[in-house]
Length: 94
Image (cartoon, rainbow, N blue to C red):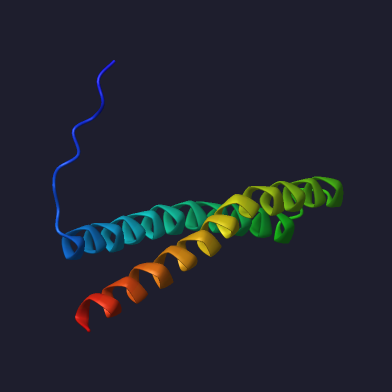
C-alpha cells in the first residue's frame, strides 16, 4: 500500500484549511444537535397529548443525554483546535 500524496502547502494555506475543516465539523454537529432537538419536540408533543408514559419519557431522556455526550466532547476539542489555529495565524502575522 502506498502513502497518500499530500499536496504541498504554505503554512498560511494549511491554517486556512484547518479553519475550514473546523467550520465543516461545526456544521455537521449542528445538524446532529438539531435532529436531537426535533426528537425532543416530538416527545414533548406526545407528552402534551398524553400519548407517552413517564417511564418512556425517562428512557428517552436518558437516550438523548447519552447521544449528546459525544458532540459535546467534540465541541470542546474543536474549541481547542480553533484556539491553536488562531494563535498560529497570529504568530505568522508578526
